[in-house]
Image (cartoon, rainbow, N blue to C red; front, side):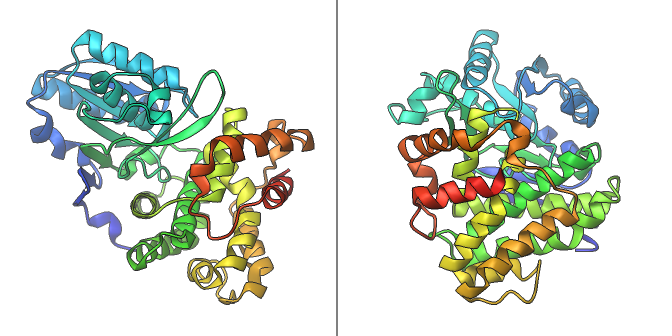
Length: 387
């Protein structure tokens, strides 16, 4: 991994061509030169601060593609943003969408690209009454080392009326860029959040009921990098070598969940950040994660131990090590400076019934691959731990 930053590469996975490495944007000119009008979807600041927006502007101007900008995407994005974006795409005659950001802009762009050509509203795809038949081409410029959405088919949006946060299997980007330069401007907190997102992607993928040896290989490599390099990166935020390694780990984790699945931790987090959109996605995962690990290790200790041995080599593939597994994850998070609680975001014991209702009545599909029977008592225990 020490020389990874010198090994730029192109990966073809599913229907995505991923360009990985410094200045990767220069490699996409031939792939997009036949388009005439693009829409750039992003948030208010990260696309510009990272330098990605100016790089994209230069490429579009060099090859003569006109463009418009939609910079209203927020963290934990709303369905209405995807629908608004789709309407702009349609009315402006756009033939290429370019998403610049972490999971939120890329996810919104995925959904908008489908709605623009397949019609309907987000809720139609959530309920399954409409299927993604056609979609506009999407170029995804990833700005974090956490999301995985640049290589997977998933998109996450929250329904405005019910505040239900749903994951949709919607489409792959046609082209993606993983350039570690764009992650240099992530502050310490966002560095921690996005990296823990990749950690839980890998841990849930390797322990899901649909895991396989190839998923195990990717997940273990991802976790080994995160365990080795994250603490170093937190203390050296502008280290491009470490950023490169972490972006590679996150990309592996993204493929792992695309081939496999997340499960109960992501399901609970979707409820929490749907109810309180100010809760960052990966922060929510880290809050409930250690206690989730306790139950997972009890259920599938062999798989869990394969992942967690990078945090603590003394963890054995035995159910009796569940407490030690939980503590290993909690101590790892503390070591990198994560000390938040769910109560910091306004949650109390009084919210437990609402959380349970949302999870069991509306998001059952999200925990179907959990390696143990998900009960109300277990979910309450996991959430109480995070308070």
